[in-house]
Structure formats: structure tokens, C-alpha cells
Length: 119
Image 1 (cartoon, rainbow, N blue to C red):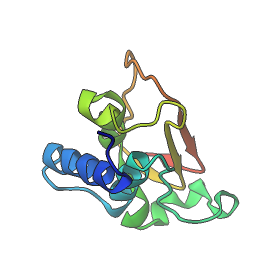
Image 2: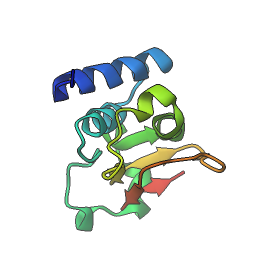
Image 3: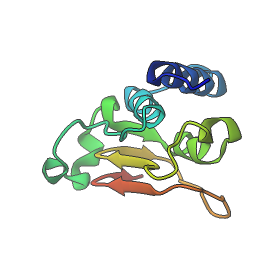
Image 4: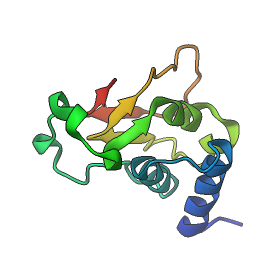
């Protein structure tokens, strides 16, 4: 039986909260919700042309993603089930904190990071 969009969102958020001990930023919740709903993770909720990654240090927690959350979403066998193969993950206007270690990871979907900063 196919899951509804709401079920997919609820299930991915539960996986993430269990894995990260319920410590998710608002932007991480948005990323997981939109990914599970075959949408785009856009923590900024703004026009990408208006987002200046050079000012990422001034952005609030509503735009902060920890790099290990992205890696987990790309590599965890259970989490990957919630990523649409043709849509993948799109992140716009985020400050990604930490090293984004994806070398040697086999990822079967596109990842797009736009107007963002990796610190």
C-alpha cells in the first residue's frame, strides 16, 4: 500500500529524530519534510536571487543545516527510501555547518545546493 504524503513526512521525521536524538534545526525539519513530500528543501523561503551566501554568518537557525544530516539523508538505507530518484535533494539559501563528507557514497539521485554556504 502506498503511503500518503503526510505519512511519508511523518515517517522520515521520526527516522531523523530517532537518529539525531530529536535535535533538528527548523531548516533540517523543512528539508526532511519537503524531501519526503517530493519537494525542495528551501529553508530560506525566499527568491534565490535575493540570497547572499557571503552573509551566511548573519542567517538565523531557520537556515542552518548540519552537514551530517544531509549525509544521513543521502546514505542511510531507510532515509533514502523517502528521496524521489528524479527529484533528489535541492537546498536553497542554507548555511551548511560542518564537513559534507560524501566521498565514496553511492547516491542514486541528484543533489543541488544553490545560494548556500558550507562552513
